[in-house]
Length: 165
Image (cartoon, rainbow, N blue to C red; front, side, top):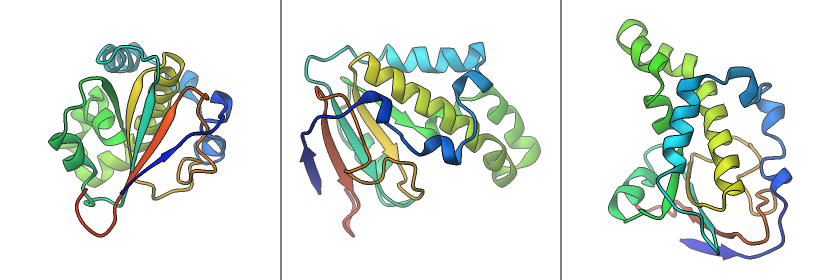
């Protein structure tokens, strides 16, 4: 199911409660390799006159990644915490040593912080965004009333309806 929402929104309210759950912002963890991940992602799509955010919500296994793979998203930036984590050099190095669970626990928050920085920069640069978000936590982006974007953005929510997207 896809819902279109158009209303005036403010960039500074994009993720109003995330700092309550994640006590660090990007400046606390910033490293050249993280900037490179963000810069590479931002180069994959041009700025848009009428940018849109496709916000995919669903529990793990609900079809968000399948939805992404089955469609052409050349003009969109993918913001996926899992994909960001899988590209972190520390995550890659720790995986064979610590195993899946311990490595995930260690790198989940850095990946989220990097992901929210990518999201912030993509909005600032007026990019089309495909946001792969589990929607499991109240991070201020789980409901229409909390997701705030600049007025120029069209927000489309794609969420799991009991069948694959």
